[in-house]
Image (tube, rainbow, N blue to C red):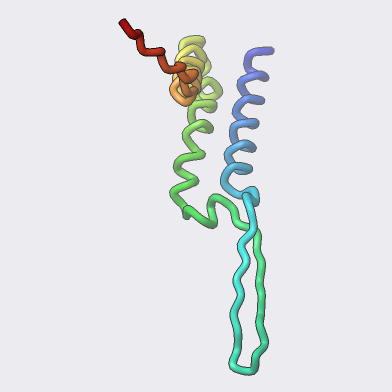
Length: 108
């Protein structure tokens, strides 16, 4: 019971996170144009990842949602383990290793 609620909550959070990542405003864009009469028109708008990169962003942000939905749709313990392994593998692959300081040259 408790596990089913947690997996459903994780799926819901993945959907919310995907929507925020795709459609949240990341910055603003300003566009200015002039007319022959000397009037300058400036227009500003908020820019989202979907706006700048297009519909392919939805494919990218849907991957974590699909991984989170696996334990909800397939109610076996193996599905939860595989889903968690995929998430941890992706998280580990995204982590950059700590920089190694340069070794001093040994002079003889």
